[in-house]
Each structure stands twice: as C-alpha cells, then as structure tokens.
Amino acid sequence: MGYVTKEQIAAAKEMDLLTYLENYERDELVHAGGRTYSTRSHGSLKISNGKWTWWSRGIGGRSALDYLIKVRGFFFTDAVEHILQQTGKSPPVICKDTKNAEGKQAFILPKKNETDKVIRTYLAGRGIDEALIESCAKEGMLYESRAYHNVVFTGKDENGEIKYAFYRATNGRKIMGEASGSDKRFSFRLVNKKSDCLHVFESAIDLLSFMTMAKMDGRNYGGTNYLSLSGVYTAQQNGRYKMPVALEHFLKTNQNIRHICLRLDYDRTGFTAAEQIRKLLKNDYAVYIVMPKMGKDQNDYLRIRKGLFDEIKIEGKEKNER
Image 1 (cartoon, rainbow, N blue to C red):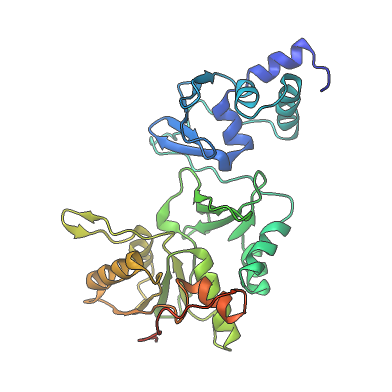
Image 2: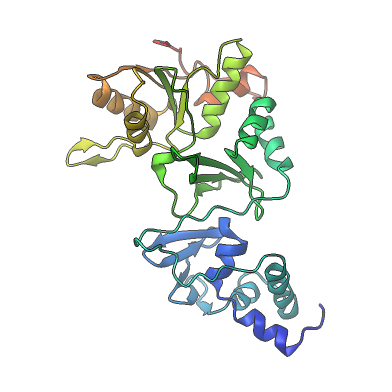
C-alpha cells in the first residue's frame, strides 16, 4: 500500500460507480431496466439515482471508491490509486444519465484493447479460420475488449457506422450479452448485393464456423449473404410469432434476397424458431431449414470435423441445402 494525499482522496471520491463502470469496466455493467443498473458479477447489486446497494449483503454506498473497497476488497489506498490511474490514462465521460436526447438507451461500445491476441487464440481454438478472423478484425467486425479480453462482435448500419455489439467471454465462462443501447436490427452480418441467397445463424461464431467449413470444402464462401440473429426466441405477439428484428431489417434493406437458409441450432428452440420463421416467409421466399450434420450447432460441427471434440455425437443429417 502506498501513500495518498487528501487531494487525491477527494478526487477519487468524486467518481460515482455508474461513471466508473461505464468508462473503465463496461463489460461488468448490466442494464436492469429504466435508470437502474446491476453488475454482471453480482446481480443483487443495484445502481440507481447516484447510489448503489448490494442487497444480498446489506451494504451500499455512493462512490466507485466505496464499491472497490466494500465489494471488490481493495485496500483504501489501493482503491484510490486504482481510480486515479484509470482517470490518468483516459479521462472519464461523466454519466449523469445514460439515455440520449430521444430517450433511448445510449449506445456505448466496450473499450478496445491494444492487442487482440487473446480473442485470436480463442476463436482459432474454436476452429475458426485464422485468415477469416484477420479479415473481420481489419473490417472492425470483431475486436478484443480492454477490461475482460472478451471477443466483441459488431454490426454496422447501411452507412458503415457501428450500431450493435455482442460480447462473449474468452476464459471458458459462459458470460455473454449485448452492449448497452445496441440496435439489434444491425446484428453481425456480411452483405453481398450480387447474391440472392441469405444464410441465417443464431450467433456470430456459428456464422464464422459455417464460412470456415465452406472454405475447407473449396466453396465460394464470400459470394453470398450471412446474418447472425444474436439468439432466437419463440415469443408471440398478439398470438403470432414475432419476426426477429435483425432478419426483418435485413430483408427490407436487401431486396435482392430470394432464398433463405435457416441454419439454427439443433434443439427445441432452434427447431421451433426455424419453423415459425419459415411460415412467415414461405409466401415470399424459398426457405430451407438446414440443421448441422453433427453436434448442436455449426461450431460443434466444425470442431468435430477438425478433431477438437473428444466425443462425437451425430445429431442429424443435413437436408434441403441449397
């Protein structure tokens, strides 16, 4: 532990927890609804109206300094030095309200790490082609976050501006989610206006896995359209299945599409979602439901083909592939 002055302590105390997390630990912040937030590590810790309360432990505070000491276990001087080091590297944007002028949740991308070695190792370990990883990284379609070294998949609008981000842990933990304020209409996708075919997946990793296998098979993997739905669900609206917003927007803005291959997960949710999507689109498009030949999803199938799984389970056969 070092020595800190009264001035340094006062400066550290000015940092509220929401501002601290928004600026320096963005992946830890979870929007709980309205103007209330929680943390990914502690769901019962709520942040609202400039205060935070860890309900399961019966403690709380106002500042980021309080949080680092009471929740993270920092010594007092270490906590002060930590905050000052962060602000010294990157002056914070004060977050009095995270909503924009239209009242919508402000879109804030996780801060980018200086290198992307961790995510390249992670994606390659899942079988993704390294040249494909490199291409997506150069296009800004994926990068490594600074705070937790997560892989962040981005989605751009028609003007090339990033409007969506989905992060996924690379340390083996099942931590994933969307960046606050993400517009799901612009989920991770690759567009080719010359092609009339669209391949649809539940996740960006499944999308990249399919492209990797197409490359392995010598097919023209770059000559078509790809879209990640960033998850699927079977919710209904007024008794009718609601079209995934990413797919709905893609079809509205790419009217060259005539054929749609639904390559969702081989499970109840994937089957149900695929059937419901086909019912909604069958009058306007040729829709094919194509499940992976082996494994639960496209990444399972890729890892099986590359020998990255210890056990191989044949779940079903691919059919109706265009």
